[in-house]
Length: 151
Image (cartoon, rainbow, N blue to C red):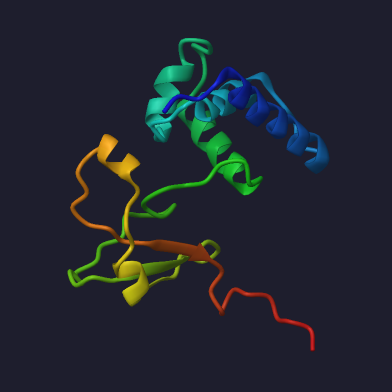
């Protein structure tokens, strides 16, 4: 799978539009960082993005890259994958199960689902690698963080 130049430009245009709508400052550094993420298929971490953008921005700091990535996430322009913002989480439950993760407070809880246990992976997964474990991570807002609903 490869991203077309048009798809990358569409993502960049969406980025610019969201910045205008939210009144967010659109700097050259933010644009270069976003363009790097928008054109990547490998879901790079902050260190990899830092290494890649330094070719265009030799004076950029790793701190700027991290702050920009979290800013982009807060604007809803990118998503995080894997560990939470604060720390890697550990799970001693080796039985088949899935996770609910609160995107506001980080609460992580196990849940069971026979339907998800039987999830058939698309053939395209075999073009990437050989799955060993399938585990679904549902991200949302937990009941403690959910704003009170009006009656």
